[in-house]
Image (cartoon, rainbow, N blue to C red; front, side):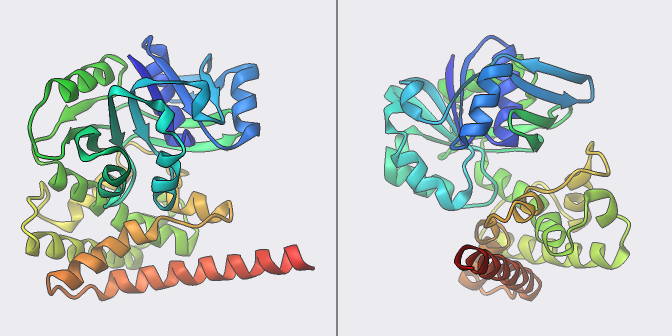
Length: 316
């Protein structure tokens, strides 16, 4: 299978390395010239539980280098989804499928507006990754499940084929006939830890050592569960504690959430598609979400402070 990963940061590289090692022609597309050049020159350095290795990957800053593919895996930051896909239409052939594995809710609608709803598949992954430097990642694949599905819940030949390819590459993957519920399940995990670690700058190990932060996390997850149920979404979890436990399962104490990684790099976060989604769904379905609204406000404040600091530095 020929695959392009649009937005091959830490997570995309972790998935791309596994697919490459399984024999798929996998293109890692990233806007960073330094990251791409490092992968081209020395391969992708992957650190994981098995040690350190280098994987000879195909990497590019422009989608045109890859050409038409069978599958596009979208992993760009949520707020770049539409622009990134419009700039990568050259990846699409007559039968190309487009699979979002991004955090949060709403990407599928954005992609459908660009490529047509018939191409779009939805998914969620619990695979983890941390960028250690250009061409160098820490990967968390082992024991982490990925769920994919058609938007209408059918078990199509194409989604079964993709799941089979992922599984053969060591990416534990299941086909979901309730992909909206599956997406909400992953959202609950992000709600539990992302904003809190972004605000406090704590790693997973530090976060899980603080009882007061756990109480806040459980309250945020409860609001999200209430909003989802009010909307008729079928969840696999019954208690907030399940999301809290799942968020850190199998990850080292020093692991950092993607939201914290974004803030440490001075980048905008995906808060609008995570806790912000809870607030929007709660508003639509009459569910109060004060904890999530507060977390959104705090992250927005941090982003504002970063933007102001960057402006001062560039105009000094």
